[in-house]
Image (tube, rainbow, N blue to C red; front, side):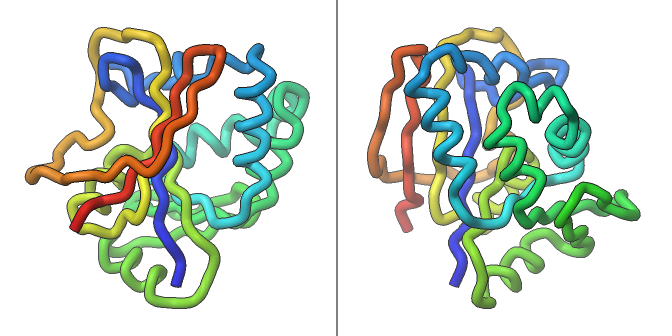
Length: 188
């Protein structure tokens, strides 16, 4: 059965978007060859990408562009070719290549997807989706990149979560650009 993995960036002060929902601060550090190799390696992995509407629209507006192709060609190729799922109550169509639009109750739909054979699913961004699925106990692993920047205010990755969730650290990896990736699994 497929696993559900979250991969997200957070600032050193704990925010995953700033007060204007901007995440551009997180996309720095590509001058570090080891970091660039890590990002490209992640892009080569399998699985289906999962988004909420806001993140989906942001990604769909960037990755199919010549700027993305020139800046990060291997990542752009993977983002544009891999299977994608967008959960939305308001979208009427999803035109980005290989995207499935799913309506209905998020938790029920993800339970259904996890109960069937298939590739793992990776949530990028999509804070509302992350917090709902984490609260429902459906996330199998959290991969969190701490970016060495303080942004002062914004939204936390688990905004809206009503109960404590204990996590077990699986591993860490630090990069010369200051980014630190931490892998966590929920503790039942």
